[in-house]
Image (cartoon, rainbow, N blue to C red; front, side, top):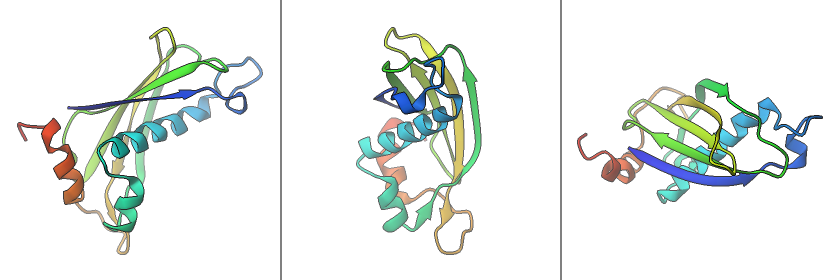
Length: 138
């Protein structure tokens, strides 16, 4: 299993009149978690698209809202891969507030597409190699 954590501070533009983080912003937080998780492996979305000609469109996004995140609060985004990706990859996300309380949780499922043909394909070999140490029994 691969787990990565990153942090973000809730910005004023991301809040509503109650100073709560607007619900639509959480999808962006999920993306931030995914991008930084890949970057921590020494591999980026940009590399995947430009060097490996692979794109990853979102197929499903599930979220549950547990409690509000407030303006100027420092959030921790924990992104987890529970299984080795093949044609699909599912990122499980938990967002915690400064007190370590769960604010939001869910998952996002993406597929791997060839950039030119737009057809489904397996995860890039270089990505799988970087994840191998986290999934020793695969």
